[in-house]
Each structure stands twice: as C-alpha cells, then as structure tokens.
Image (cartoon, rainbow, N blue to C red; front, side):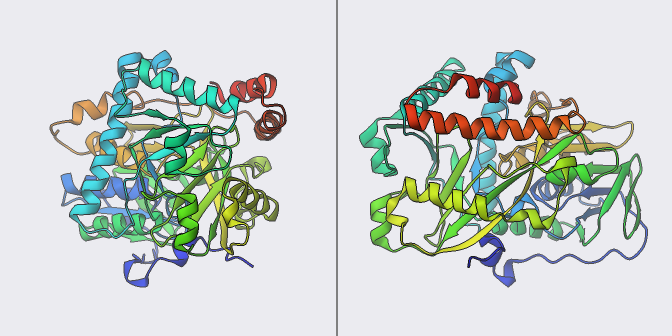
Length: 462
C-alpha cells in the first residue's frame, strides 16, 4: 500500500520545515498575501527586499506549500500554459518572444537564489526532453520545434534529438526522436517552497495558518479567524481560488496525480538513463511528466482525473486508485525495467486553469488588489516571475529592469470566466475524454486522431 502523503512532504526534513503561527482575531497590516505557495512566498521575498519596513502577512488555509507548490512534479521549467502563437496573436510577436526570454532568465534567477542562500532543494539543471514514440507524436514535436525557430530560438535553446541521441539520454520504449531544451531543472518542490518561505520569514514576513479566507475586497480579507485589513491585498490562491466568494468561475481546479518508486538500483538507472536528471514527457495528448529525484527514485504523474461538478475541492479527491493504476501502467510501459519495482507513494491535488489557459499578473493601485496565477501546472518557475512582477508593481520607486517586467504580455491580462454548470462539467470532462480517445486511436492506428485532437484543441482555445 503506497503512502497518500506526497513523496516530497514525506522526505522533507523537520529542520527544513517552516512552521506557521495561528491568527487569533482581527489584525491590521500593510500588505496581506492570501496563499503560502510559491507565488505568495516569492512575492513576499521580493516585496520585502524592496520595502524592508513593510508589515507583511502571508495567510494560508493549511500552511506553507500545502497546495500545488509543495506537491507538483518538480519541473522548474520555462514552459508556459499559453503558446507563443497564442501570445503573438493577442500581443504581437515581439511580446511573445520577450515573454519566453523572461522565462529563460527566470530559471537563472531561481538558480541564483537557491545557490546564494544554500536552499537544499535538489536543484539540478539537466534540461528536459519530450519524446516522440509514434509518427503523430513526431509530427507534433517537429511542429513545436518549428514554432520556436519561427520566434528566433536556435539550437542552443531547443534541439531535435535523433533516435540514438534520445535513447542515450532516456531509453524509453519505442522512442523515435525527442525535443530537448536545457531550460529546465529538476527540484524537490517542498524543499524549494519551504526554502523560499524561510527567506521571506527572515525578511520579516509573518506566515499565519490555518487561516481560511472566504472573501477578498479592497482593504480587507474576511477569514474564519477574523478580518485582516491592509492597504495591499495579493491573491495567490491558484487551484483554491474557486473557494473564494465570487470567484468560483474565475479558475477551475483540475486534479493532477503522481506516483513515486522506491529508490532504484544503479543497474536500473543504467537501463533507463536520465543521468543528468532530465525531466521527461512525451508527445501524447493526455499530459504526463516525470523526473529522476535526487535520491534516485522516479516521480511520475499525469492528468486524467475527473473534474468535479461545481469546481468542488475535497481532500478525498487527492488520490484515485483508477488514476494511480493508469499512471503506474504508463510508467512501466515507458520503462519495463520497473515492472517489479515497489511504488511507495501516490498523491495529487488541484491546479488552476483559467478559461483561456493563460496565466497572468495584475495590480490595481486604486483598489490595492493584486493577483497572480493560472499556471495550469507550469508554475514552479513562473511563480518567481510573478513574484518579481508583483513586487515591481506594488513597491514605491522603480529599479532597473522593472519596465521590462511590466511590459510582458501577461501583465494585466484578464481571462473570461468559465461557463456555469453543468456546461463546464460537460465540457471539461469531454476534453479529458477526447485526449484519452485521441491517444488510444493513435496508439492503435499509428495515425493522428484529427477529430478528437481537434475537439481537444477547440476546448483549449488553441
């Protein structure tokens, strides 16, 4: 029987944990951040760097990193949920390219912070590869590479590996080629999140939990422990945004789930590869993701869990035997050497999806309200860019580079609201089913599933 606590929290040493303190009654402060995940904690860190005398409070329903920040796949990547083409249509080609370059720079910034402060997060910049294991997948990754080339990113950023090169890095079954980028690091997400929390706390942030926010409005946050009044209020609730009054259609909670193996012998790793701890996925429609951990396990996850009617979030949804079995079978199909391996952990939880699959940051100085999120699972690095951007917006005075941050196309973007029920329940679960059917058809026929792939593209607004 596998643990239902995430691998990351099960392997987080007590001396690295940052504890929170309770809120007992109403308080006043200069700024309050709702959500003690990476978005909120990076924002606190950079805001206090600029405004060290700011009385800043971070609140969370459960504690530091108990949402997606502490239980994700550990990809510190430069991926964005919205495509370059999508950003170019909405904001122009130059803006789309600037956004991608900003993500490359963000990975450098995270590495700088982790190294400078000695955050023991298992950070290893081994890059990432997307394998093609069928002809349709080959066409999809070739198209993806062509889009990067069209926007001016050369071989040093994104490169197509032939079968020999791909197999040398990651010996998946049926691998035909792979798209490789150096712009990704594998991390232990709970260690990273608590490391950033420690930096924010050491700069003066007060981290309060458990505090469940129910309403955010100009100047005040209503919680189950009292009212918090502040000049600036930053919403960093990501997958739990639908729990806030008036926000149940802003972003929906999609569940993603993972499994992890016991530590693997060197002989198994010799068969699999991943010597540089490359993160990996393949070109299927139903998203999968994996990494070799610093303690030589395989941590692997995927989508496929149902969306729950009314954007319901419940701890009982964090595990699902059917999804666990499917994820485990998929991983063994990729790497048959794992057939007799013991799987020690199974966990999951919600991530946030805006209606147009576009993450964003925003600040209204008139009301004092700020927000960031909508990463659709690509948030480990993007949260750092969000934190720097929000700090630049909120803090008095400006610094070199602020204009570049505030000219990025995600600043001020507003996604339209999701449809009311039962339309969104039908549509989201139809998309999940379309992805599964498209993959099954392509696996069986070796040809692209234009119909179900087209249904999925339409639902995602591609």
